Each structure stands twice: as structure tokens, then as C-alpha cells.
Amino acid sequence: MNRKDVPFGNPVVLEFYKGIIDIHYSQLKDAAQDAWPWVRMGDRDALAQLKASWHPELFESVVGVLNVAIERLRFCRLAVNKHQGGQLAGILNGLDNPAFDLVLTSLITQPNREHQQTLIQSLPALDNKKPIPGETLTRFQYALLNLTQYLTATPAGKKQLDKIAQVILEMPRSKPLADALNQLTAVTKETPEQHAFFQELLPKWQTTIHSRENAPYFALLSKAKGFLGREDLSGFARWFGNIKGYAAGILTDMICDPLYLTHQERLQAAQAITNLEEDEFDPQNSIRLYWVERLVLQDPQNKDLLQAVLQQVKAMPSSPDVIEALTWQSVQDEARSTESARHFYETAIEYHANRLQSQA
Amino acid sequence: MHKAKSASLLFAPNQADAYISRSARFGQFQADGAVLNQQYRHALKLVSQGKAKALAEALLKLELEDREIVMGLLCAPAGSTPEEKKVVAQVIAQLVQPNKKTNEDTRFTQLYLLHALISDNHQDKALVRQLLNIAVSLPTSIALIERLEQTRKRYSMLELASKKTNFFRQAN
Image (cartoon, rainbow over all chains, first blue to last red):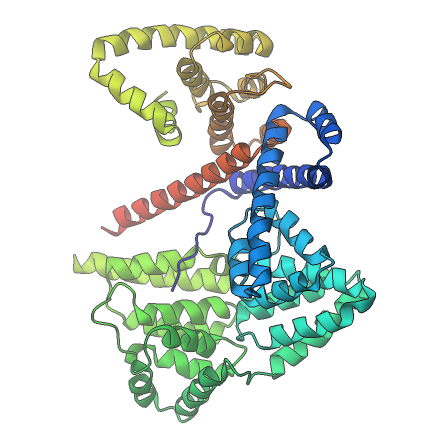
């Protein structure tokens, strides 16, 4: 139930910062890539030439980036030797771009296959939540894009590509992952072989839903669909109330995701909100409001669904906590980019604010 | 003027400490205020004459803190006219010597002043373009990027906080 750190403020000011941060990031990345081979070869003359031609602040920063990259590559080798994909992902997630870029390129292009193998194993644990600063892709997407680009251009890369496909097919289904794969399919249009890889992978990933790791969640989802299909909303709420913790979060994400439930089933899910049991020990972290967020933000163009959710939101008791939670949801990118979602939140917030005022 | 001081408090925490300690020594504060007011008027005169280089040179002779206050006043909405702000932007660009490693505080002062200008004048397209060129021409460094990201985040959170405060004020 994480609240995203979303930018808020005048669009011109935000765009101003985004633009200059992107430009400086890309300059730093290019400079680090220029210096990287000379550092690895220990060519002091070449580095001295770079130092003379660059601004001192840039040179100092590039040296900093390269030192981090060299140090982290050492840790990466340890993870590779132990075939620890999760550990490798942890190291990569903790790196700033452009050190991430340098380390990733080194891992992909190493003649030793172990590096690529462990990198492939690390894919599910790479960050797929927010884009790398200065890039439009997340770490997961960036690694997947670069790996597949390298392997499709390598004669012996086919086997490794199959292993990547296998790892992706085993990953839990979610909208962010579907979006990530769709985006990669779109951005590889200029490279036909790489594009074909994603084109083949996507439908398989969408239909192969019963992977080993996800089987328990799909069993729960199927049960949930049963309740919603029969319109047994109180039965559904009682059953859902017995599912706790992490599983409840995953199941909520799946139930509210248009990937898994039909429009009609999600309308029923919206109707069930009021029946959901709140956690008396954690009233701030409202389960009902989390359902509202997931249903609205995962399908913000669906007006009928939004209308059904709005009825449930209006039925909630008004409080500053409800208004605050709705305000947070309303400033997320998905909510701000769709007119119907914007309208939904404006109406809901105004409704509770007015009711609170009249009760005061 | 008030706006410049509050912006200074919001975006430069060190500056805020200095300000509080000055307030405690009120007599000193009044004296400082008179000097700064005189420096601001002198700076405004140079700006109105379009003498960006002369002003930058004069400002570089001041203490960093005083330089920031005088420039902060010029950047404030009522501190100079829209046309004068374009000269102020040129001064910001000239506040450091080119191709020389700059003290981090001086670099951050440049960013703070750029922010003061962009946040209050985002409707002036020509000025925004000018500020963009200045920001892009600053030497790339990790510290610069981190500072830009921090400022953007802080700006965003302050805007959100301000919106929420207004909202609750209206609701109550």
C-alpha cells in the first residue's frame, strides 16, 4: 500500500527541472562511458587528456562514478560466483545511473557466461517501479532491453534468450509488468529480431498464468471470481477477511486488475467495498481505501466502474483521514492524466469536505 | 521583499539559521538590513542599466550570504521588473568564473536563485528559455544533479503541502 512520491507543482517548473536533470544525467553518462575503457586499461595518458579537456567538476564526478562502478563490479563478481541472482539485483538496484549503466554493460558483455546467467536470474528482483533518473525505463526494463539487444546480435545468443523468456514467464502477473513488456515491445520496433522476441513473449506471458510460484494466488483469485460471479458480496467479504498480510495485498491487486477480472466482476468487486472488514488495529491503513485506489488507478477510463466505486466512497464516514487518503490518490500520475479519474477524486473529496464542514 | 526572505528560509536551511541568529541580535540585524538595502538599491540601479557584468563583479566581492540576499531580493516578484529579471538571470550565469572549479556553496546559490526566478515567473516564456540555457550550461556534476533533484522534490512537496493546507482551511 505504498504511496508514490509524485511530483506536484506548476508543470512548467517541473518540466524545467526534468529537462535539465535529464541533460546533465546524459552528459555525465556519456562522459563516464568515454573514460571507462581508459580506466579499465589503466591508460593514464588518455585520462590526463580527458582531464585537460573537461571542466574540473565534471572530471571529478566521472572519477567518482567510475570508482563506484569498479568497486560494485567486484561485489557483482562475488554474487556471480555464488549464482546469487537476488544478491546481484540488490547491488544493481542500489546503483545510481550512470554507474548502473557501466556495471550492467560489463556484466552483459563479459565473455564468461556465468555473468549473463546470473543477470538473467536477477531480472525478477530488479526495480520495475520507477524509471531510472534521466531515462524513461525502469532498471528491470533497461536490463532486459540491453540484454536482449546484445543476445539477438550474438550468434550463440538464442539459448540465453530462451532462458530469459523462461524467467519472465515465471514472474507474477501484474499490470506494471504487462506495461513494462508492452513498452519494450514498442521501443524495439527498429530492431526486428529483438522486437520479435518481445512479440512472441507477450502473448505467452499473458496466457501462461499458472506458473509454479503463482499457483496459490490464482487459486485464491478463482475463488474470489466464484463469489463475485454469484454476487455473494457478504460471503466474499467474510472470506477475504480471513486472508491476511502480503497475500491480501497481492490478491487485491489481482482482483482490481483489468488483466484478470471481467468488467462485470470488477463492478461486483466495487460493490463489495463497504462489506470489507477494516483492520481495527490499523485504521489509518484503510483496506477499503486501498481497494478504491486500485480499482480507480488501474482502470481510470472506466466510467461505469468509477461511478460504482464513487457510491461506495460516499458511503464511508467523512473524516480528515479519508480526505487525506483521497487527496494522495488524486495526485498520482494515473489519476491526473485521465479526466474521468480527476473528476472522480474532485467529486469524492468535495463530498467529504462538505459533509465534514456541515458536521462541524 | 517579504517573499524573498521567506523563499530564502525555505530553500537554504543554513541561511535560515543565520537569519534566526541575526533576529536575536536585533541591533546588528537593523544595521545589516540598512547595508543590505543600500546594496540592493545599488544592484537594482546596475540591473536597470543592463550592466550584468558589472553587477556580477560587484556581487563577487560580497560575502556569499549577503550576495544571496541581494540577489534574492532582485529575483522576488516585486524586487525588479520582468525586463530587469532577464538581466538578473544574466548576472546569475556570471556569478562564477568559467572553467574553474567552483565552491559548492556558490554553485548552490546559483541554483537557488534560478529556482527563485523560475518558480515565480514560469509564465514568461523568454525568461524560462533563458534560465534553461543557464542551467544546462552549468558544468555537469553529481552534486549538481543531486541538488537539482532535491530542489525539484522539495518544490513539489511544498506545493502539495500548500494545496493541502488551503484545502483544509477551506474545509474547516
